[in-house]
Figure 1: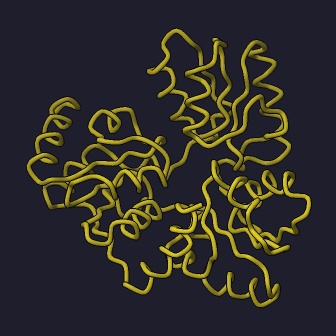
Figure 2: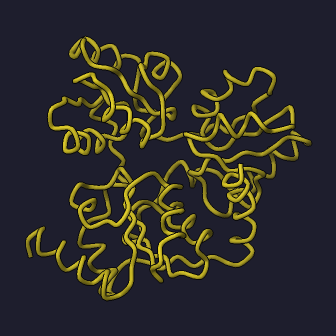
Length: 303
């Protein structure tokens, strides 16, 4: 089968089986072309919740599919490639969170959306990279335990000097590969380019940026800017997607190392086989997990 033939079959089957296909922004361009919605992890979960379809295929990683299930417990949710995990979401255990809470009584526990549903059951508030600063300003507690990404936490902390932040020693292993040296080299090679970066990168990288934001915010900024050249400091698939969106502009990767193996493992055939009923994994969560995780997610939605 050709790429086009597989795409045509996916489109036919998703209509026949009443399936909504969600694709995270780090997915391949060929997957974008069969998706009903494209975006970041939380935005996609809301799109899946609001869609009329009875089933969802989340083309991303496991915590994203779990978030879909938490927001849409009545729907069938599938992860097309079961090995697509997120090292940052999975680097903490429930026991790690409970230990931090015991060591810091009276603290608010805030989790990045990039956490497992089980971890979310131990948290007071869930945030995304785009909503973290706004939502955390409203926390009444003086101390915030922020998990699991200290880089995103440090980016928010500088705007909340009245709060004490406590971190877990974690973070995104892919965004953490970006270095100050990478920034210097990229700016030297492309002196007219604006530098757009994700807050999961180290502080010495983000402080050099012309714009810091979530993946979709980076893409919107590049599309709307009058500038013609950009250095992209997030997952390298965004360089390709922006080039398709803006063929009159030039986009450069900050580093060849910013490619997420977990995101890239999902293929068109994984989606095709899931729709055929011979592949993928249905996400099943206990009611206690769904109820517990939904509390901190709903607080984010309401905020």
